Length: 157
Image (cartoon, rainbow, N blue to C red; front, side, top):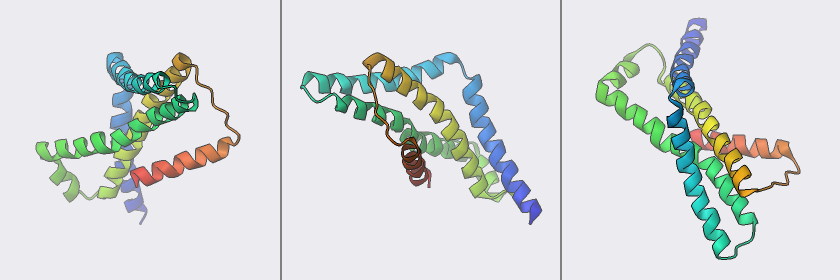
């Protein structure tokens, strides 16, 4: 039993390590481009709501949506694309047939993606707060963290 747990942990760690290390050593232009793309999309909606005279709270909702969207895109784009690339290169068959559990591979892919996406999301959040001067009145930070974690668990399943 101990050997199975070791294989599971090592597999998840190895898959997460590749994604985290890739994000941290990636060319800075890639990170800036992904943040700029998300920010410009968010800015479009903020200015749209301002132009139609919507309440200021709408800008905060757009900012929170801009913060959460990269997580959704990570699930839809990054994880699915990674599995497609593994299939195209012939590695998916090796992954499935290896003694390491597929769930450990997917867990590592998910953990690495969450770390990678959190960096991007926090940058988008802080740039949006700074540029649009949006303020939040958080009355219970633990409830916010709990809801965010439950949302991530539902998303990454």
